[in-house]
Length: 79
Length: 244
Image 1 (cartoon, rainbow over the protein chains, first blue to last red):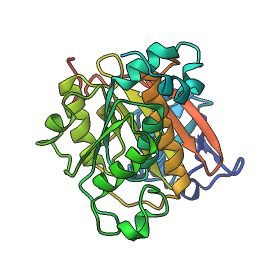
Image 2: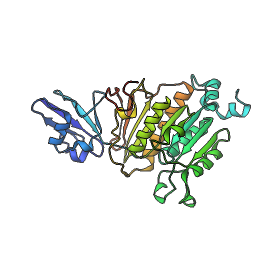
Image 3: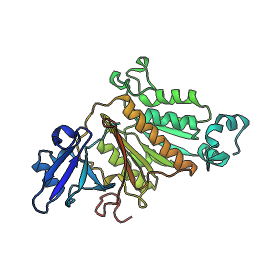
Image 4: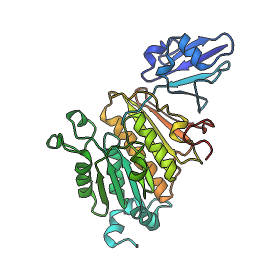
């Protein structure tokens, strides 16, 4: 299946976008959690706080389905 | 207490808002807000609560003013370096609006102190800068049944939500409190926007106007730039709010 990972913030450099300047197309084999996919494509899950898909917050245990556009958000704790 | 002539004129531009009116302003003047942290988020949040006429604002911070604060913490100047933040912020805020009682508290917020510090507040604003202290504040707000506005910033990114469990997720439903604290780079405008949005959430809640971000997370990616509002669900395994 094909999914799209997207980040406009500090994760962009790790993500290495190839569709446009924010988005990378990923071919995923099998059913696996987002955490594993991120680690396989060089985005350590420690750098991702959460993801959102179709306007809904998802955790890294989420198992993507074909066509998902997944926006990644970094941990942010400053004030 | 009914508004005085001076107050009616002072607050007229906001009491004209649908649903706010004199009654909303009276509610605001009778409210108490605990601002946890007088830094990049706390300065703008406290300023807009003050000029709006929140009756009492408790400004709590255990830090002193450092030179590197001055790019975003606009209640302080070079003359204030090494002084504690809370009383300096309180003095500046009092000058903005004598209607408001501003109470400075020089204290570190932790699991042993947080509940006592926030007691009596109608609302808590999380303007903190590290996960561990945020979690302590979250636990205290849950224990006291006080809603909390959450915001966090780094670089051009900001997060914001209105937390009021059990009706909404709590902070630990979506924030990992075990991550190490970092001092990220942050331009003043990022903190200014998110701190101002915290004040907006507070004013909506306290006056009963508008719609808060209850059950939603606002994400600002200023570098792109994009604003998103996404839905959140409670974490059934949340260590802080499960079983409420």
